[in-house]
Amino acid sequence: MNYFEDTNQCKRFQFNKKMKVPFVDLKRQHEAIKDELNEAIHRVISSGNFILGVEVEAFEAEFAAYTGAKHCVTCANGTDALELAFEALGIGDGDEVILPAFGWVSASMALKRIGAVPIFVDIHPDTFHITVDEIAPAITARTKAVVIVHLFGQANEVYKVSKLCKEKGLLLIEDCAQAHGLFIDGQQHVGNFGDIGTFSFYPTKNLGCMGDGGGVITNNSAIANKIRALRDYGRVEGRFTIDGRNSRMDGLQAAVLRTKLPYLDGWNGKRREIANRYNQILKQKLEYTPTTLHNVFYKYILRLDPSLVLQIFPRAVFINEGNRYDIVKHSKGITMLEENQTTMYSLPNRPELTETEITYICHSLT
Ligand SMILES: Cc1ncc(COP(=O)(O)O)c(C=O)c1O
Image 1: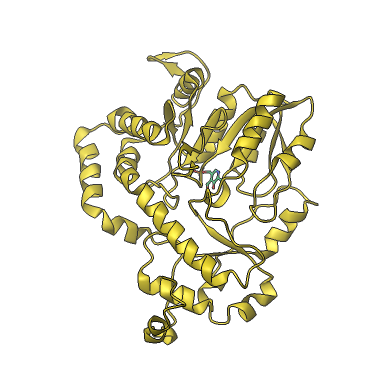
Image 2: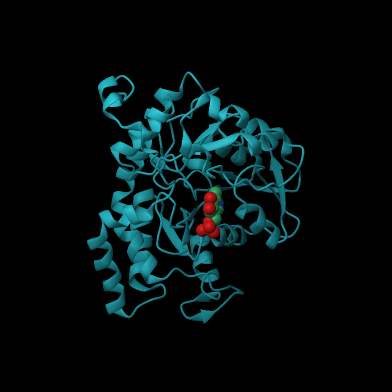
């Protein structure tokens, strides 16, 4: 039922409480599964096994099975996951790599660090993602790969982009740092549409650990083996074979992730449910409605003229609390990029929101 059809519920609700609804509240998520987390953490402490080891191997097997990929290889964070993926795919000096002009900095930074050249293309106004129409004209003889980012938990045109990359002989990397548990058409998990999918397990992500963490999924055994070596000083079966680095996951993070993974689908379901409610309430007010198709709603994003925010949502106190997406400017002159910098807002949609908080947010938006 839509809360706004239930007028009694709205009347019963004491709006004037000026409730604060924080965007992130991991304490609440952890409180709900505290006993399981404590058990997992103590299991690692008593094992004395802290770097890689059984918990990491078990998580890699479980996450690979969950995503339907042949391999999962973890590492220290999502930025390393991208850099390791690029290195393992042989991307390097002077190679052009096409990626969205709008989003998080990690992919472009990682590319620059390995000497590759990021080629930024504009995003679609309703999805915040790049499309084949933007990617195709940016392809040159030096293009080696395309990076798509499933920003805010949403995927778009994965089949089309994958087809284009195959036709043009380009590598495809999917940055899934914001899209854990996103199955396209309920079947294929993102990260499986190209050569490799990269993940961040930063604490606030849909699946997050209690520190930094990252990983990749791939169906290519050679790439998986290369990343296994690269993340561990270039070692293969104890012998130093290539110039690698230290980017390993620790057992405590893996144990936390193993504890949380079985909850991921339920948490994503809750995020979708909250997004659906927002969509129903906001459909008259917004230029576009965020799609619930292929979306695990890492963030529920609105685009609004800042001067209209208080007119449109006169009571929405939470909307002005520094909850704009942090946008990093990569390049100038890209229309959507410029526009997004001033018009993007997000609403809280974490799975642990209580009914009272959801009612409060919904009520204040009307
Ligand atoms: C889309 C995207 N890619 C990469 C990263 C990098 O992940 P990490 O912070 O674990 O390095 C993030 C993190 O926020 C992200 O949102």
